[in-house]
Every structure is written in C-alpha cells, then in structure tokens.
Amino acid sequence: MLSSFAAWSADKCAVEITSTDQMTFDSKLISIPKSCSSFTVTLLHSGEMPKEVMGHNWVLTRAADMQAVAQDGWSAGIANGYLKKNDTRVIAHTKLIGGGERDSITIDTSKLETGEKYHFFCSVPAHLSVMKGELTFGV
Ligand code: ZN
Image (cartoon, rainbow, N blue to C red; front, side, top):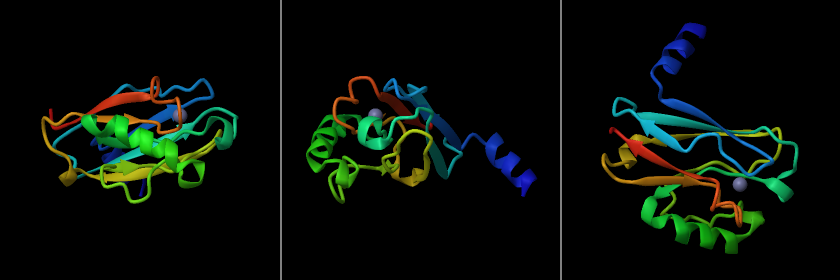
C-alpha cells in the first residue's frame, strides 16, 4: 500500500489546499497535468472556528460561471453548503468544513478542456473576493 501511495503522489494528480480562520487559501494556482485521468483535491481547515462562523468549501467552475454560482450559493444558504442544489455549472466541490476538518473530492478530468479557464473559490458569502484561484488542465 505504501509504495502505491508514493507512486500516486509522485504523479502529482492530487493537491492539498489549506484554508484558515483568516479567510485564505494557501494556493492561487492549480495546474493539472494532462496525464491525470482524475485529480484529487483535499481541502483542510487549519483554523479553529466552526463552519457556522468561518466555514469554507472549494468549488470549481468555468471562470465565466464563478460569480453567478457564488451568488446562487449565497441564496441557497448554509443548510445547502452555500451551493444551489444540483447546480450543473459546478464541476466539483467539497463540502463546507470548519476548523480542524478536511474533505476530499476527485475530479474526473474528462470533464475539463485544455485551454479553458477555470476558477476555484469558496462560496461562503463575502469570501469570494479573497478565496479564489485559477485552475488549468494540460497546459
Ligand atoms: Zn471561505
């Protein structure tokens, strides 16, 4: 098991992103190599505040969809993890987590296009202005 984990890690088809009580992600750019058929994102929350106060999620959309998805998420409220139910514009997302928690998701890269601009962000109200970054595939 250990050796297969090491091989998987070396392939860079995974990333860990840390979020904080200071409303930050420690990554602003994620590049997924074309060789990855899937890509795993693990979101950590290194803070102490509960998700009702300083919760974070990690949401992936096309760059053009980010603002509208975030606004619909704010309307959906915390009970829905600040995402509209079954929002087809959302390519992948973690659940909403609070301090000390983590969540992982795996993206099927066949859903991504080379050269398309993607954004990842936190859909909690008012977090978008600072908690966002760019994601590219195969470039
Ligand atoms: Zn956030």
